[in-house]
Length: 382
Image (tube, rainbow, N blue to C red):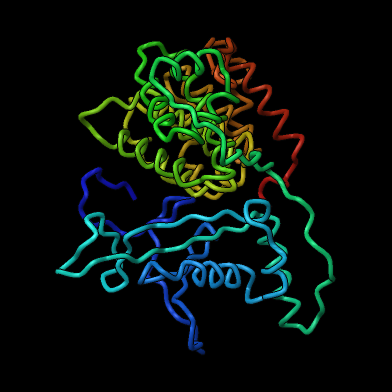
């Protein structure tokens, strides 16, 4: 999944979840004007325009395919209110590669992969519509209600755009001025890079605060422009994978972004687990998974989370406590007996919630976890 910064050819990837996508293809009964279409594992649908001049047709192909060929539903949907769009430029259909240089074997590459991803509620409606069409049932008339999460208000295209600089972004982040940072992100694409640089902070509390701020900013920016946030996620993973670079704050930030917008970036969750193999990043990974579990426990339960159960007996207090926190948030009845045994562990630790340090103990975290597990009963395993 990780991609180098060099300008060599790369595999096409989904601008929403970052996963590699396969070559688009045609249906069993190809139409005269049909474009090849594919589907990402995150649910996004994409179409290929080899010329780069038929993006409108590609959008229609995507939208109708995402709606399971329900044209009536497709024409009712409103961009951003009902679905997000993205695109990958300089795509070569022949080799199924993105060619940053724009030329390949003497050919000019102008292709575009156009992506559409319905909001979760719309995906369910489209699936039900498809089922009703197969069974002969009729879909009730009427437009879909507005769906969550809220869409960031549209900016006036005639406004005078503001330019960001490192010092300004640093001051806004320290003050937690999310509104101002979101405005700067829409006006100046460098804002997210300036925020990323703030993670190189020797102060642990500063890194966790910055990670939380970035997560909140990205949640709002991605409601209109998910692509720049996906690019940031790639840069963060690349930094984590680079043995010659420090990964300060990177994993924590990934967790905050996913937790804030699991509907778009939830597929990145599974890519955190490989970093458990390095002792220097284990605590950060478990903390990040705990953040995601707070908003979307199902994403954690779809991973091999049970591999973390042995860490409940880890010699480090921080590791034990963070695993307890995680297991409680996913209502892991599988870990109940081990967590019960930690209710007498008075070892103290610091855990970060919403970017701020909170002093607690393993025993207190264990008691909270048991309460969450009991409140859910056996439903967590369903």
